[in-house]
Length: 126
Image (tube, helix red, strand yellow):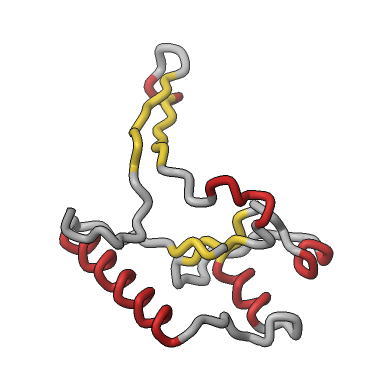
């Protein structure tokens, strides 16, 4: 493996479900490794960040904003709203070395995806 510290989730399988005989009712999906493990009850919020604002908001209640939305997958606009709130102080706290490590991993993953002709990259933040 070229990049053992890769943050890209492993694809376990690609599937197609065809309902009836009409191809128009086919559904394609993939199964990836579990990113949360047994800690799902500890997840207060999670974000699927793409670096875009177009159609990147999930409606949540005020209670979910204040106390957490659990496994409801929030998006970029939700993250910006949360980061700007008084409770979040507008920052993610991460030490300098861990930050550099994360940036290096994202750069390597992005380069790999680019070489494959792929451009869709999400950062899942729990």
